[in-house]
Length: 295
Ligand code: HH2
Image (cartoon, rainbow, N blue to C red; front, side, top):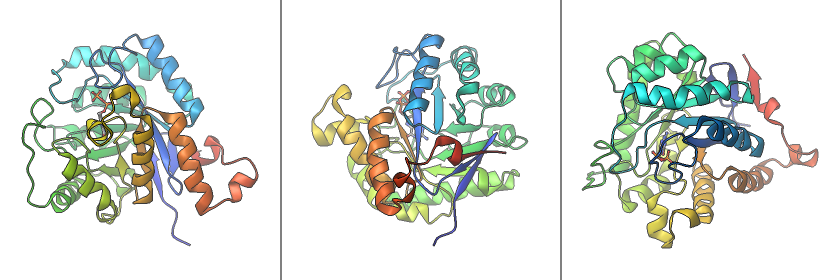
């Protein structure tokens, strides 16, 4: 039997022996899939509670859209968007993640007690790793080529899997150098962030090579345009493709999937889980409490 895998996430130790769902809550007016739907804090909090009830074991709150062509948001505006929502979700009973690239926002969120910081720039911002070092929060280190406004113009790699893997390895080493233990780190190849459909499929096929870095892998393919290109479906009709992508990611070694459609993904992953180990399902499945040990 393989050694058990976990991630230290602030207040919790998250059991990753079975795949974990991270539910997405965008408090933005312009996110590519749910922009404007949860711009009011109350609706964002209610949505987060719903996602936790549906089976999300992490809630990821973002205040700046990263879709190709999105316009930047000021520190003040981003804080105004995410902090009330994170505050309202503190008692949700699952780890809270903030999706941000700004060290100032990271600091505010950490002061409030968030359990994870998800940075699409891989904590390359000045003082980003310093902001995380004194906390117990988890880090999601993501790869992106270029920057959101222009990243899809002409992404180019000689060998996408090797280049993404080398970047992630370098950022893990930088985090460790800053005093952050590996047990707090997960990595993400950054599907759609400066990548074509061909790059994304090559990364998904070769995910075991990213997992070989030795830290848990997180994958976000939910509703992305690459799935629209494959299926010819508009945003609101990509749920089946998103579930298929999440399942493939998990089969190829992802431990965490970042999704909008938690309920559907949960069912698909439960089938995968039960195939590997049916015992907990004989007695009703594993509760969130059993997978989230308070530290
Ligand atoms: N994708 C998005 C945002 N944050 N973080 C990680 N770690 N991995 C991802 O793949 C990822 C991410 C984009 O999706 P979404 O949040 O729905 O849209 P937007 O950035 O427009 O708010």
